Image 1: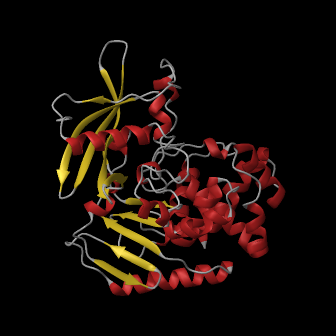
Image 2: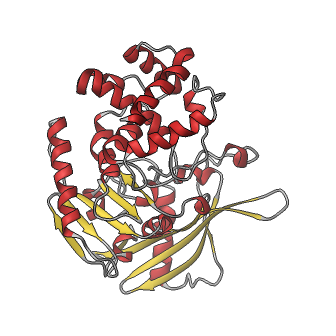
Image 3: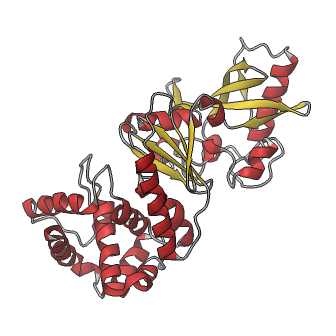
Length: 376
């Protein structure tokens, strides 16, 4: 599952985009006369004004992280679309605190706007670190700091990080490694080093990477996970060492950047299940729901809403179509399904071209195929 937030058009429609220099408000109780704190604030201000939503060798960031990661700022890779810093045009930053930690500093910043009634509309509260290297401070992710006491286990290409309270299961880790070997053999690609962070709840993932608060956090609770594909990191919440769904995304999504997300999510569910259950389990639940609601029309399947905390329609319908492609033509047909584009129009065009089913016939097609799959 990939966690996203929309552009918040409704919230932002009354705000004026800020194309000029980003200004930071500093909480008055912060001792800006302290030379170290003053420099840290200056670095953070410079970074926010250096197009941080663009990928380039940003001079204000720690060199070792810039060289290690494709998108080195983790605050910008796990949640907001198109970018956390895109929203700087709507939400102004306030530095709430700058606190020392060993030879580093933790900067806590609120992004918020003011409503017409004068109240504050908070967008997120983030924490980022500034560390001194070769006499100068540079920004870095807080993830390493937050997990500094966590044990590490490496099995195959996967490096596991987990809280001290977690009991590592080497048998499940070996099973996960074998899955990677099988997946990469099927697609004729090589395994690459990945990191896998295990936590108890989705909210803890966001806290690890530096979010103390964010719009939508009340919905992101419980089990699940996400893949930071650019940096080859998987986060599992309430999961164990066996969590193939997000690893499918890690390996397959980069191969098909032009694929519709329904197909990519469906393929991950087909191979790796969802919420601890294999795809057939979800297919049977969805098939029963549709049987109980014969009047529901699936011709516009992308807009179908089935409010169920356990079974997501995109996993079921996307996974069903991926299975049909594999059954009818193996990987070549699945590759074809992945090749049409990312828009809704592209999705329906893909289904019509690959399966010969027009959008006006999708309702009967999906219901029939789903019933057959649920009986397997």
